[in-house]
Structures are given as structure tokens and as C-alpha cells.
Amino acid sequence: MFDQKMPALLATALTGPFATDHESHDFEPFDQFDSAEELRDWWTAWTGNENAGVPPLRCFGQDGTGGLAAIWVRDPAAAIDTQPVVFLGSEGELAVLARDLGDYVWLLAGGVGPLEAVSELERTPTAVPEIVALAPGAPRTIEAILADARPLLEELEEFVKETVHGPFDEFGEPLR
Image (spheres, rainbow, N blue to C red):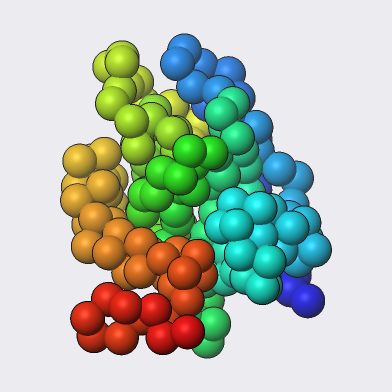
């Protein structure tokens, strides 16, 4: 249904030492995006909607709590590396981690992983030189990346709400 091959930048960044092995961070990167079938099954369970279908997400890793990091395909006509990177937590947490893949790699390069960007950091992040060398463009701070991504959160929340409860009218009432 869709290509499971990750963009080269993401695949390479996820092989860096940061991906699985540093203090306060438990993240298991996948070798490829989840299949459409795996994604549909997870999305159905996560949303509780048997008719949810396949979401516009490309999951590329899971943290120790069961939360998933994914590229959110907001615009199917746009390149995948221009799409936002999101976190969908095991307890329903939602976060937009980065406005695009380049910013996400800078987040990793700054020493911050998906769950850490959502919850409070319990440590001072340390840059990861191997990932800094991969990161595209001018250096970005963790604070700037998260601030630039924050405006997309409302749209992500609305997308999830509609999947869980169905479309709503202008008064917030389900159309069903």
C-alpha cells in the first residue's frame, strides 16, 4: 500500500549510538516503516475505532512505554522528508516533535529522543557528533525545533479526535 523503505537520512540517523543507547532514553528504531497492515491494526487498537483504517503515519520506532515515533503524512503530494515527525504515546500522549525530517535529525543530534521531547527532560542533553555530522542545514536548537513544531499540535489532535469520535459540526457535536 505504501513504500516501507525509510528516507536515507532517517535510516542513517537511527543507526547512530543515540538511537538505543544513552541515559534516560529507551528507543527501538525499526529497520523499515511498519507495513500498512501493522499500522492499521495498531491504529485500530490505539484509537478504539474498528473503522479507523490506515492512518497517514509512517512509524519508524518505539520507546519503552510502547509509544511510537512516526512521520505524519499531512500532505500526500509532498515529499516524505518535508512532513512533520510526531509521537503517539501508549497513554494517548500526542506531540509534534519536528516540522520536518531535517529538524527531527537536529533534535536527535542535540541528544533528545521522542519521549524526552514530550515529557520533561531529567538530564542535560549532550550533542551526538555522529548525528550532528548528518543533520542538514544550519544547526537548530532543541527549543527552536519544538517551538516551530508546536503550532501543528492542534491539527494532529483534531485528526486523532475525528478518528476516535468521527467528524464534528461547528459546535463540537458528532455528525453521526
